[in-house]
Length: 195
Image (cartoon, rainbow, N blue to C red; front, side, top):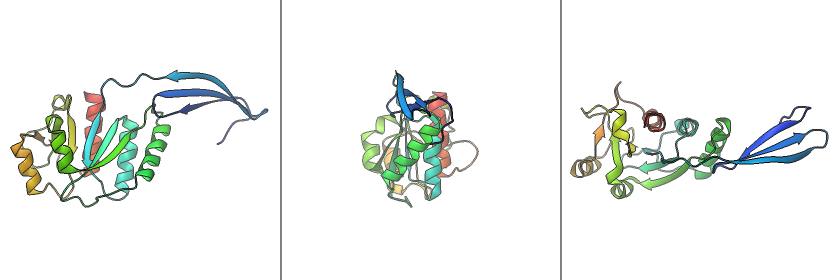
């Protein structure tokens, strides 16, 4: 930690809305507690479900949705998913660093689930971003919903049939086909800033 030669205020965040201010005095090398502030929890929980992005795009995705202020990400393993697992400890470290840098008071929560099981249990609240649909996305279609972003290999025919049978809204984003992490960042932005 780089500290000045003068008294400095240090703020520690617990990731659950708690902010703790301390004063560091370089002469005495002590931390003096100043105050505790509790940031009220968000009223609306904002989540997305997404196939695991490949390679370093995974890190980039985590950094950006943390900075945006998303509450949770459910990584889904689809039949055509290229990547099917990740190191949760490493991912949480990336989230903590991005949250500290962007001064987020709450940490992004992460989980990984089999796609069909998770979608079946949340089917009433899903909207799927799908590059090959004719219905173009508008922000109001996300109200109270969890956007789902599929794998770059596309959805398996069984997944497509399930969406059709359960009348899950499938929308396309304007501007062409997006990479998984780009569509996820767009979804997070619309959720946090647009709804």
